[in-house]
Image (cartoon, rainbow, N blue to C red; front, top):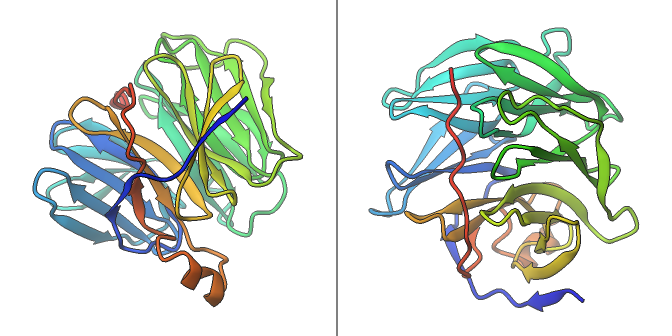
Length: 295
């Protein structure tokens, strides 16, 4: 039985992104970062001061990983770049798919080893046009091919298990991972099969107890699964297209979620003014901070 909860949270930022995605939290500065992919923007919200900044980008980008206090790694439609936090300057770091200019980056997350998993997809969401890559110290390795919409990339706290999905197929996959390298050490298996349920498995994070928190695009909820793939709770949000959660706050005990209004008509947008906003779920969680990327 899945426990269902009404939304008791709040709006952290009401800037309505076309496609809000890729939230992450920097505990050193108490700052939440996320992208408006289709709007080519990087958003920054300092939780201490409430100061909000929007950084225009020259390309579509979707994933940010901390390197250190002054640098970030961002995944874009033109590959991976190191971003200087103070100036916003981008320095090319590594190519992903130079032979596929019709593709862009999508979901991704840093493994506890310091490696990055990053997914790509067609800008027109063509079937099986994307892949998932492992990036470590500048070396890029394709680990899963034929992905249409890569999402839910996240890892168990000890780094021995990786998760991902192709949102078009709607199955959450589980794969054993080498905790020292972040490379898969086994074959993926289906953990959650929700092909016949409303909505799509989108972005996910894993908490300190190994439970998976998943934003379910098109269903207006965030689901929580235990490590065996059983959905134990469902939290409603006031936006039908939540895209990705992130643990935030000094103790990683809060949960934020990005949302989107991409594809909604005027009536649908009017009915949900929170579509595209950054929301907070309003519950206490046992989160963990995303690891830093080892450059």
